[in-house]
Image (tube, each protein chain N blue to C red):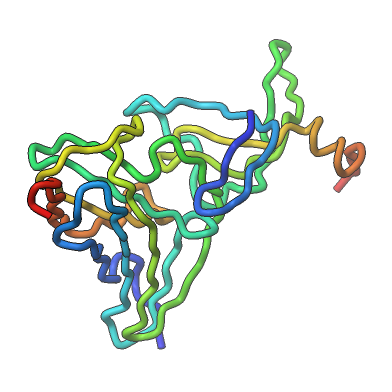
Length: 136
Length: 83
């Protein structure tokens, strides 16, 4: 089987559609080989580095997972079999980049998988609603 | 400074960070650069080994390296041999 190019994987982000205010938000970034051949990924970091961006609906970023973070500059070569999925997980504590609690409301969440290229592989944005205490 | 390694429980002690986190800064590091020597350029056009690179920020505009003095303190003095 021939390895496919690095831009072939399907990259998605899973978050709950709505969560109570203050509850940790589980984040799962999935990288799937949708092809029928081996897919070689040239990823950055060990463990694999990935970013998650939480923004208000007007685009204002309230939290970025890797803001201020230091990652290892390791080139990690991963090969995915046809249909195989690599899962990367983390949790957002509903705080801003300065550590304050975000307000209830609508947000858009986007994942980014860092590779050896200049641009990350970006997931489609997914909506997240943080419920106010009164709506719980 | 002490630096937490993202995604791990590891904190690297007494590390050096160089670069900029200002948006639009020049990219100076990328995947696979870990282990690279970091040099200081002297005014007289000579250079000295400053340490070993191991990390950086997501944008690649900032590097983290272990100072040579600390490496030598742990592993012993560096011995330079010819090719």
